[in-house]
Length: 342
Ligand SMILES: [Mn+2]
Image (tube, rainbow, N blue to C red; front, side, top):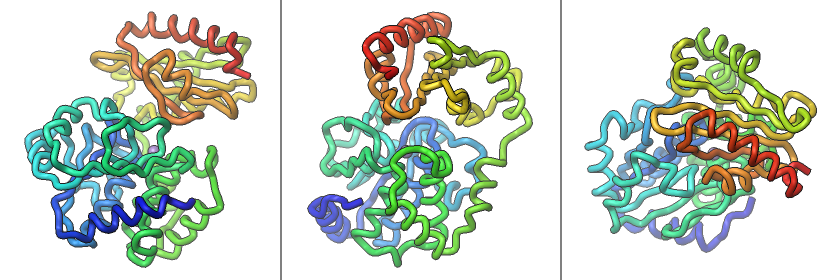
């Protein structure tokens, strides 16, 4: 994937002016791509002589604990003052794997306090917000980690990639593509993987560390969700599931445990769209997935003030879970009438 030459040159010239204080931030409920891209990019920047602090709004899922450098992450929810100070003092702020400040939730105020830093977006979600000084916004990139790889390659050359950076970037590429099964798989992506392999990553180890490292509670919660909570509507073409706080508590829920559940109904041949409703303290978090031409980015924007990618998006609802599901069912019917389900 060819990045805009002028953007690479601009970034390179900013990064070679002088040593700077740099902050990276990523989205709420950070996933493998958010963390992999943030930590790898931080290492690259350190290699260029900058001091870097990587911040996320809340904790990452426990099955990412093994990732190199993960202990360096500043978690806003646990160290708000440290994070605020780093943001206040930053000369440059990189926003990775999200494109609307609202996705930072509790962290968005802290970011608004700094209006002198250059803000640079590196992201692959659709329709970025205005207000960035430099934009690496490539919705055709399968992950932000792949985008970071491309920036490294085109700005510095792949020689700077260490084994640890390679592991971090691979986690993002693997998780955002569902282990290389979703859309936007390009020859360049697999060439990048080949380079990461040359750096010494062990793919089966990374796979096991991420996908075969859950608790027993998570396995039981998954069984419960599919067996008891999955509903099929619209002639079996649309699925949804929901989990209340009480249900999650029963299975000793830990953050990240419901990741991937929403994909499972799409293993049913007829199902074209799937939704998951997770009850949080003050709102319902909605995850949407789809197949082929069914555009859940559009659906999320129209009905649940969210967005994301064509086949993977999210949103929020401030209604009760019951009312949210009613609204979803109505929205699916309207969406289908307008041809959204093909
Ligand atoms: Mn991503």
